[in-house]
Length: 175
Image 1 (cartoon, rainbow, N blue to C red):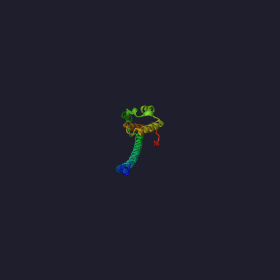
Image 2: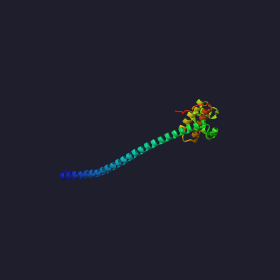
Image 3: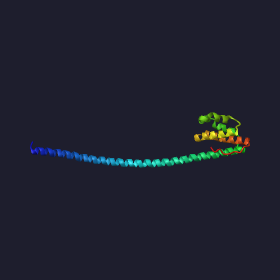
Image 4: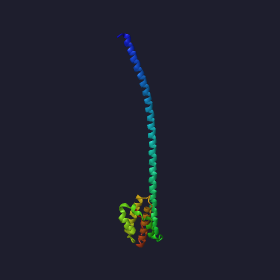
């Protein structure tokens, strides 16, 4: 082969390599640009996710506070019902039973004991205390059910009635 053929082959190969390198360089630049765009998108998404996490945490705190407030309110209301019944202000406590006729669907494990208390006319002070504790537990687990509230009010009224009958001082249940 002569030198011109070799040189022309080298120039042709160099041209091809140069063109390919230029094409690859342009493609690589576009890929880098796309990667940077994706990176910015991921960073934006990460920021938004962190904001959502903060918002969810704040919302959880507010829901927890609201749940505590409902529990405190239920304690106050139950204490009030107990006090009013002990003083004989509330009459017809047995009528409350009608409000929770479907209570068996939510009382779970304590079903047998609660039904005993509901169907028993005369409770001892100890039974009345246990009845209120169980009713409060049901209320804590099923605060969204009307029957749970009626059960708690009925138990509180029965406790007040029982303490009046035994002429016993009504003290708050702290558990």
